[in-house]
Length: 286
Image (cartoon, rainbow, N blue to C red; front, side):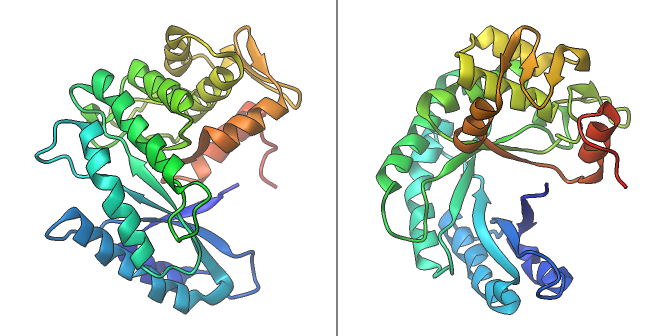
């Protein structure tokens, strides 16, 4: 269920010491967040990536780095579209120069700036263009994907339902796979008692992505799915997954999970699993 374990580049040594003994488990897949600072964004990328090879050497076949994650710089640029156009070539160059053991998929975080309605399509078009140029090409850098941040320590870090809906719709239009991160502890949209923030639900995002991919839903319908707080509006069975009157089956779900909404990250493992078990979607823990 875990998929990839997300780890900052600065803590890879700590992860290496915490991994199970070789042979005790299947090898771990790791996604590395490139978190080093430098005189330039490219210098920070290179510094972060320099720590990957020693990590891989120390863990042998016990782990593999399958993806990396980074947020492009915004300073001095006109918006997220311009930031992505400027950031992607140095990212590809840094990955290719790092000498990684296996090819990796870069996930580029798309921040929601003040002109997100105008700049978001431009940003995702930049990612789509890079994907096209790297598809079928030999090298350590695979076609990039997008990343959306759904929460944080401030209310402003939580994008609105219409922002998330537009992000999903534009990723589908440009055929850019994406992952979501931050604040997605629970299946459905709800108020966090500790902070008072309204948190997004990971099932909401999954339903919006899967159903839009299957049925080409309107942007308003996608927004309504993202904003829904009533778990009874959603149905999850072995035959179909749906929201209200919109449903689709396993083949369409698999296609959307492969080509559109490929993963989400949470700092909690127990909370998502416990919530789904309480709903009856997963069997209770033994």
